[in-house]
Image (cartoon, each protein chain N blue to C red):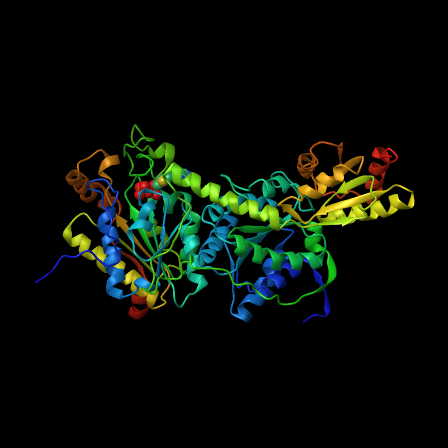
Length: 251
Length: 354
Ligand SMILES: Cc1ncc(C[n+]2csc(CCOP(=O)(O)OP(=O)(O)O)c2C)c(N)n1
């Protein structure tokens, strides 16, 4: 008999996320991973500023709340404090990671900082009510791009996984999605590998999770999942962008 | 080692930090404090410590935040423009009640300013240093020996009260060489049960956090923090008095300005002017009592500063405006000479209160 249980690493409290938001799924995948790898007692998570700011209430491991965009720097301190005994992950949105915190993100990757980053790309600033994000698609209507994102005026989205994969320091970069069962399974595999890499001291891992924001996209949860398939994934193709380990084996 | 060695002020800070048990340093290069980073870069790898050059002062202070969260001694250093960038982190450290040591070897401002000594970050350091209600313990060394001693003291106070201690030095203090005695201090053990080090699955999780969305709760946290600040104001004030027993005119100065002031006071005494000095060592908590008492004895105060007049406001408050407070200052990297201070003393001296 298969029992569908709550992971031990996920606290027994109601999540505050909107109906249809995929933060909950991603939390679960991270918590399952921590359980399966048996690292709950060593793990320190870093919550961002964004919709997942309260993630420190949801994971049962030690948690730190970082300033907007600074999670990779905070994680660097947490990791370097005791590199052999701390497993450190950050959980960040696109505004947090790819706009205000871009420098911290890029340099943590360049340093091959031995941490795991879960990057939730929902193409919008969720928490502040739906403004344009660095990952908002061309033409996407948001509160601060009411006529659609005009690339002549405010430029193009940042493709984080593609960009970071250019850095020698980055160890493992994969983009996944959580819009259907198959993609959720792949996402789990990627997240688990990103944590395993850290345990094995393989350095910087970042998993970009293409996610939804039905509330601020102004869609039903079902429509939002379709929008991921039809609009997001074509612009943000899924797959492994960097796997230093596999690359070196292949050579 | 307890024999005297000749050292730069910046190096004395670095070595003292190591002696105090600090094994994590994060910083970004800026004149006139880079010797601290250079010293740490050399030493830390040899003693199992971590020196890391951050991508910015913003990142450096957040790395400090990370290590501080684990309960270990950690520091960063910078100079004025870099401290402005650290303001966000300083506020988060305060909001999360984390200990840290931050060094500001000040240079002239505002903006990019210059690279010569200044004391014009006094307001920034003593009145908060970031958004929200908070304080930092601000220590103002006036010799290379004090650069070392106050660094050691700063780590202890930071842990004792779970807050940031800032060494507010200036370019002269950082660059000058003097003999110092350096000894490993005995380190006090404080409760660290709040630290995030992994639960080992045998305790409830800890959360390092400055977010508090319920106003009643956030208010309580602020009141509790200020209760702690009150204890610091009562117990941790440090200052030096020089020739104040019979002084009729009181110079107030800290850091390099206090050394200049002493020379001027010696010269004034030779001319029969009873001048004395109060040198605040803690700029916060400010030595209010000693100024208040002095106000009943002296005819006036002169605040000697490398700023447009910042500490002068605290002297007026402390002395309850009972006596005039004059300013004698140079700025932009300039330092008042003993002659200039002596001139100021002569100009304001009225011949004694009697
Ligand atoms: C320094 C600073 N600037 C701005 C904010 C306001 N703010 C809070 S959350 C947020 C955007 C978060 O968006 P994202 O990172 O995409 O995460 P999401 O909410 O979509 O999960 C902003 C701008 C802040 N808290 N701090």
